[in-house]
Amino acid sequence: MSDASSKLMDQLHTQVGVKHAALGITLLIYPLVASDFFTFQIGGYSLILGTIALSLMMLVGYGGIVSLAQLSVAGLAGYLVAILGENTSGVHGFGWPWWVVVPTAIAAATFFSGIIGAVAARTDGIYTIMITLAISVVFFYFTRQNYEIFNGFTGFSGIKPPVIFGVDLIAPVPFYYLCLAVAASCYFAVLYGKRSTFGLAFQGVRDNARRMEALGFSPFLHRVFAHVLAGVVAGMAGVLLVWFGGRISPGTVGINVTIDILVIAVVGGIIHPIGPFVGALVFVLLETFAIDFIVPERFNTLIGLVFLTIIFFSPNGLVGIWDRICESITPNKKGEGV
Image 1 (cartoon, rainbow, N blue to C red):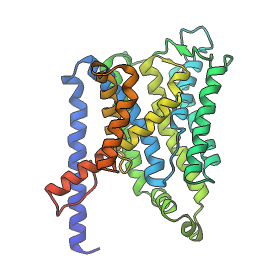
Image 2 (tube, rainbow, N blue to C red):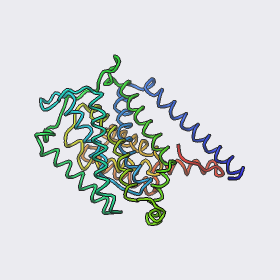
Image 3 (tube, rainbow, N blue to C red):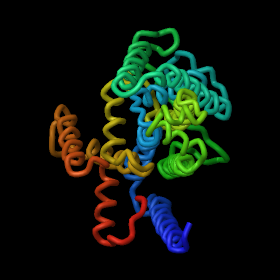
Image 4 (cartoon, helix red, strand yellow):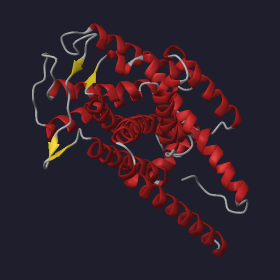
């Protein structure tokens, strides 16, 4: 690599590092200037949905795999927290300690995601979408009709996060920082994974699976392992999701919410890990405040219009728009988004 190229890479890394530092400081001080409502309902919820959408972004952005089963993976983790932990529904609630429940829920979600990957990895394009959609539909109806395990239509309520070292995680500020810690960990793990040996090979499988197979790589195993990693991210978010709402039911993993996760990832930008969080923030703001302007029945219409408008101007979502603005301001310095 030439000196000029090395200097350019150093400049890009410095710019990205500064952007991450500025974003990190903003997120850390956010609860200090925001009300409890904005801290918990807007900040915490956006981070949770963004993390679920991040698991989808991993598969789509780096592997070209459009999976509509990520919410089901997160939902399984949430259900296990309710079943193995404590709830007020009078069904199950085995009362296991949180430090056993949480790893068990995440591990089960990861295993479930690996099975989905093994089923879907041999397909491509529209067939992958249909298979994962079918899995989501089956999971939704199974939770709705099964009363012995999932308590059917009612689901579980009264689920609370634990108190750790005297800190009640249900309080808005501690819960926000918990969500921020999980989201940041997943974000930087995905960002690192893109540049890792596996990440580069996975992107190679996306671009030309036959050539990678000829080089000795297994496209099938790479896709399955990518689903496993995405399952870890979705499982962690699923635990936070059930703690956030205090309940879980079939409506939590419904088909309409599954499509919302896809919309969040695409609107924010499927090309960079920051995109799902941007899309989640926009979605949560619209979901929270659109009721002041439109009737609830028209919310999906509003989301559809926002989706079409953003994609029309930028196929890479809001992150793509931001990158174009940055390039127009500094045309000689091209780099990654935040």
